[in-house]
Image (tube, helix red, strand yellow):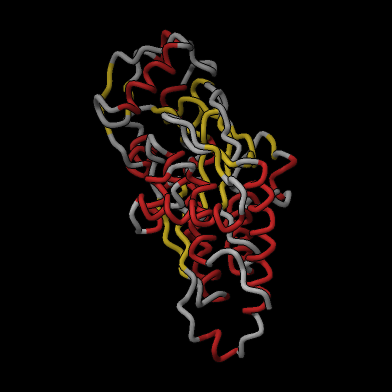
Length: 319
């Protein structure tokens, strides 16, 4: 077999830079220096005799047409490598470290739809480890995903916001201001904004970016809370306060705990929410497929997860 004009380490660095388009971020992700990333790419380009990236001062590197063709072949190469590795004896394969996947998912989805089914998943896949980050995505979500921090992400985002190309749209769910039935007694729904403004509001953390963003969003509908009775970053705390009739808050219908739907109702409709899905490229690893299938079915096939519509690409194979 002829010697190859690259090393496996060079391929790892190249694949990382294609995702991050940042020498610094690739260095942080791979645990090496920025200079090492640059040197590995230069050496790879010299050995191949082609430019894989276009570099311009002050701009992020972009993959050239030769780089895209090389990336396509790299994926084929990786798949072939995984197929060859599949010939290991069963005992040798079992000696490997168990695969560890990190998942970003909204706390409401984690608590209501995924966590109750985890025992069955782990029983069927005892060697797969899942680590969940069940919180509101950071303001730099794009960087978190591009840097490879998460293997999967399943989040809700308001439908008036753009959708990055690395996300797939799965479903559309209702959004609005929710509160206890007592706030609607003797009144016709939806309540008028003037009445909504007088009710007690539960908001995100005071003076946080999320609170300022929410107030700006409310302003579009003529909603200006006059009486904020609490601030919390925790979904379950906010949901419990709604159930007890302490106050009202903005929610996505699908993440309202199903056992609260008899007492907590939508008082005023707002922008709907999209369910978005991200999956890191793990080639043809069957364990990755099993995790993806579990996460999607745990939410979308649960009868308690109420949707307005499910997009055609929800179960489509990723490109």
